[in-house]
Length: 246
Image (cartoon, rainbow, N blue to C red; front, side):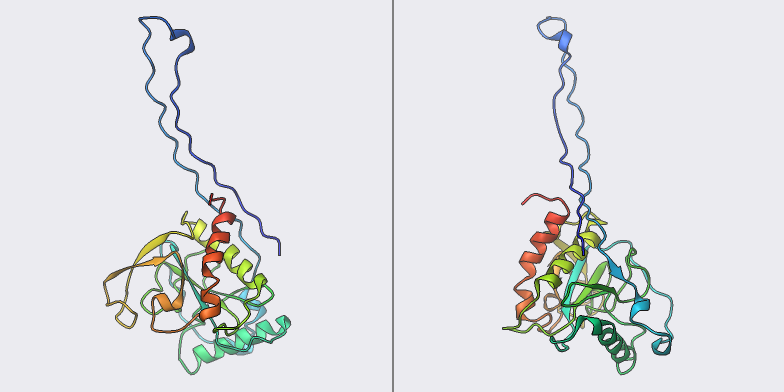
């Protein structure tokens, strides 16, 4: 997968003096030139495999129209708690299995994750509604609004190996989604809890990393210690892909 980035442009502030006025007593210096607004830090959209690649007609579940927020300001990282030794060609089947479990036994209207990433670094569209749009997911209890859920296919508890291709793809995806709202992946953001099943009472405001693990918001060990330990590096790479300086 080719990853590309669009570098940010630093804003400039300078004082411009009229050349023919220098040294003349009656000359007046011009006022400072107004600072130009900083250009947004965006990143290229990575390649994303559409839902149609894993959701066949026999597996489709009747669902209501997707819901949307105004923008995405945070990413929550998950793991799917499934085996790690799969062939990447089987990823669509695994995602279809996850979808069946969430829409069947759990009676959800769709798969909860907005995106899923396999160990080879392939990114799959998860929840319906359009990859370019701020789709409201069902991935982080209390904090599904204005966030995107990215799930790593596998189980990444302590001692597990987290493939570099996977984390590179997650960084590229986060850089792109957060860049649409000019959010630095290394920053902190404030979100309002929508219910009291999260770590925070309904209506309260909580501060999270813009790229956070699921455990930050919910009583869970997800995305596992091994993947959680990689989050700082994923944030840094995502920031570089947005053209931000260290």
